[in-house]
Length: 137
Image 1: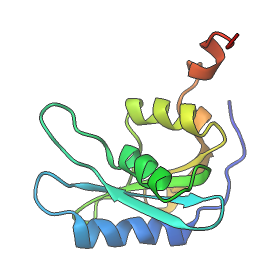
Image 2: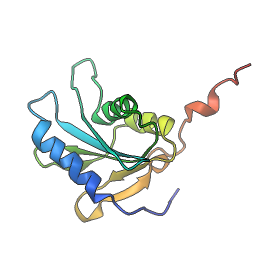
Image 3: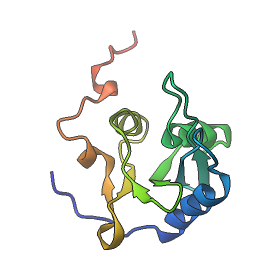
Image 4: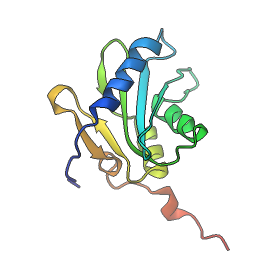
């Protein structure tokens, strides 16, 4: 699957970088994420590391968006603290993002290779949870 890349939302990347720079401290919060809601708002969050597998920053953003009434997200990006730049979502986050927002674009890559791609492109031959649910009777 080679979909055409969409323009990179630089304001979104900068918002995530700002949160990583100002809110990620120590080993418990090392990644920040930002998403653009369909209405234009930017919603941010940080991971909550825990040895039991605490939520990644992308998952925190999904919950924060819902708490703010933003149920449609267009684009998401995650960045590492200590100026590590854009980082790709892990496999669990890729699946959750696809399930919640099948038309979402995710910003990935490094340096001059940063690009915005459909989440489905990050999870080829993907399992789509909604496709396997029984119809309600």
